[in-house]
Amino acid sequence: MNVIKNVNHIGIAVNSIETALPFYTETLGLTFEAVEHVASQRVRVAFISAGNCKLELLEPTSPDSPVAKFIEKRGEGIHHIALGVDNIEERIQQMIEKGIPMIDNQSRAGAGGANIAFVHPKASKGVLVEFCEKAATQHDS
Image (cartoon, rainbow, N blue to C red; front, side, top):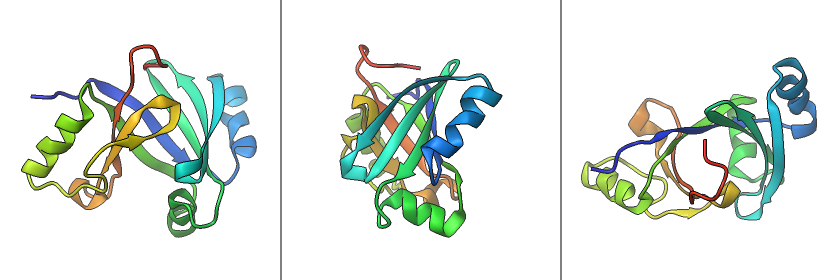
């Protein structure tokens, strides 16, 4: 069975990376790593190292992006929890075979060079869960 390796990162929806970043870096003393634009998701992502887990600040770049819609509905805050897996396609198949509703029935490209897939939040009592498979050469948590 394909097991969960770790909590890879926690995605946090914010209106502005520039406004939110000082709390994490200056107040909490965490290490800022980089910002990446993920055009397919219409979002900018700031990567922050938090020990054995990353934080990703997610800033929408378009009012119709999933993150913009999330902020409009729920406000800024935790958007998703990403769980690291070794074989994302196998994990997706396991979920489908168990009747777990998926947003993504196959993986897609995400931030940081990862392959990602989301479980529908109705399966997890309202928590958006992401499966995340990263190559060993990338920033692994």
